[in-house]
Length: 346
Ligand SMILES: NC(=O)c1ccc[n+]([C@@H]2O[C@H](COP(=O)([O-])OP(=O)(O)OC[C@H]3O[C@@H](n4cnc5c(N)ncnc54)[C@H](O)[C@@H]3O)[C@@H](O)[C@H]2O)c1
Image (cartoon, rainbow, N blue to C red; front, side):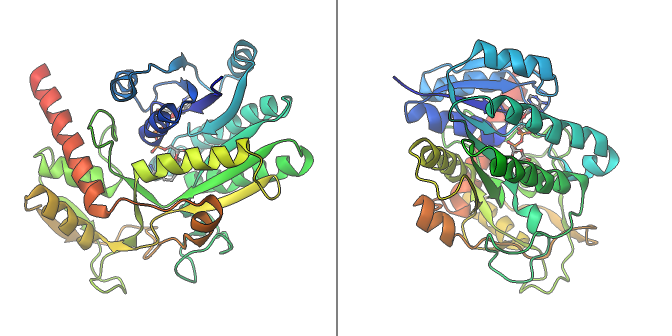
């Protein structure tokens, strides 16, 4: 019988791609999402790709009673992948309590339920933001966690501590934190992708929206950083690679292959690309010139971050396969599909 996996935030950007990857590997998926940053249409996109409609519970994980009822209703969940969170750094500075409530209370409620179960498996969405500006590159998992630059970043650090502390006293709980670098791209079918609400906070949706004519030009924050072309460097990882990594990590837990009951892995490509290189990659695959201009540095931006992926490569036997061009191509295809849809609705 196929195993049942709960994916919280499963209608979001990374969650939806992971649901597809899980279903394609034969897992039965139940999604919890409160649609605060996603839409029900994503369910249709997932179903179109996999021909399987996942079970869906429209539930707010901040509602402890509702979380408890969920686990009564689904007693046979074998693993949980926890994506649901608020993720806008700027918003977290303006509204820290929303972030501490949404990103930490929800985690606590899930772990409280899981610790009562027989063999709970838990995967947590963490971020390279925990490293801040690392002293050494590429960044390994043993690089020190730096003081968080924002309440959002702090929720990832505290989230990891909550899991680690819980694992120490709940030995039957098996957990993995995955520290993502910079997820970009979309499913190659363009049936699911990233749906930023309002002005995108991340580079790639801003690029594709600019190319689609929704924005006049892209602002590149700073061109005087100590990098070869003066712009910031990031490790852009295709969301398809990221989704597959979640299945691999889950199977490590389900197959009892862990050393210790709490592990942490970086998920990146191991390669850094500057903002200008990312723009060039987009221009190459889209055949479009992107209008952009340089503006002042943005406060709090890390200059360079890219992953040492040795641990994920060796231990998880996972390696990113897609290139930045693949990711840009899929993101562009997704943007064009969104535009077609918007135009047909007007
Ligand atoms: N996208 C990135 O650049 C990035 C980088 C590092 C880490 N992460 C982490 O990965 C996870 C997923 O990110 P994403 O980009 O897919 O974000 P997303 O906003 O697209 O997806 C999150 C989903 O969770 C849902 N959600 C939020 N709060 C909820 C609640 N209280 N109850 C139920 N559902 C709730 C939202 O509606 C949304 O569908 C987040 O934890 C995020 O912090 C993302």
